[in-house]
Image (cartoon, rainbow, N blue to C red; front, side, top):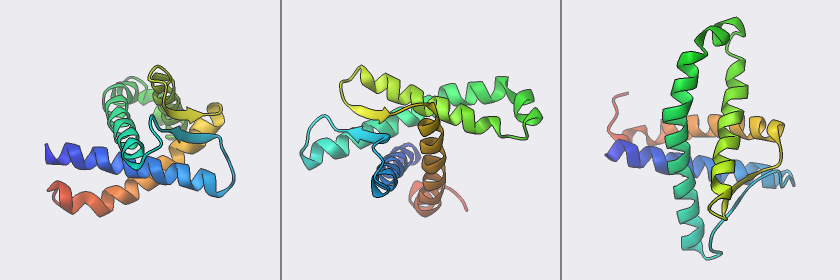
Length: 136
């Protein structure tokens, strides 16, 4: 259970940093709209998005990677950029039903957002690994 909570928090922090990276360059193409402007509402929005990313990536992402394994081999793994971008857009689409959440301008911004999120998530995962109880 602790590992799951640490991953959700890691996803939330990575998403927050991803939106900060895009905002630092003056881009409003990948952003998060919180359900409430107060700090608790913003944090809960990022935690909900971190949970949703974990579920979508864990269930649907794993199924796609298994089924599309020959395509991964054929493209030397470059198709993973497209798959991760589509999963990123899927999370943005799901959150439109909530009325708040992730907003992505188009497909290519989704791919770039997924790349930035992946790199930051990997770095945060390295930092949070001791908290999750995982072996090094």
